[in-house]
Length: 107
Image 1 (cartoon, rainbow, N blue to C red):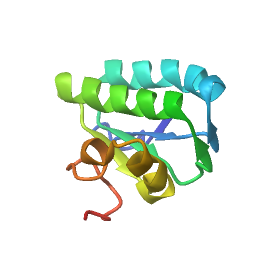
Image 2: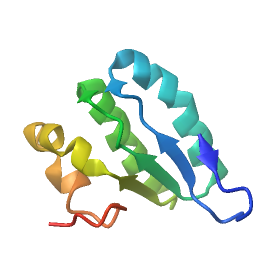
Image 3: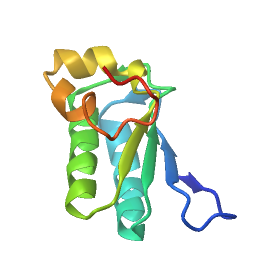
């Protein structure tokens, strides 16, 4: 997890693992919890993701929903890297047609 310490309002940036399986989910879970507790905007970078399973998608969906409930903006950068899997899972409405995109690839 990283953030721009020169700007206290900067988003917390989290880069996802190349393989988002159950092990990666366990690794990222505490990182996401910490970021949500901090209350700053969160930017999730999907650029390096080469494989994502159901557990990875569920984690991202949960992060997005929890962020909304807590008024913590959650944005996805480079979401095109996982877009085919999002569509296959039937989650396009949640991820792809929301204001939570940071990559400018709105449909």
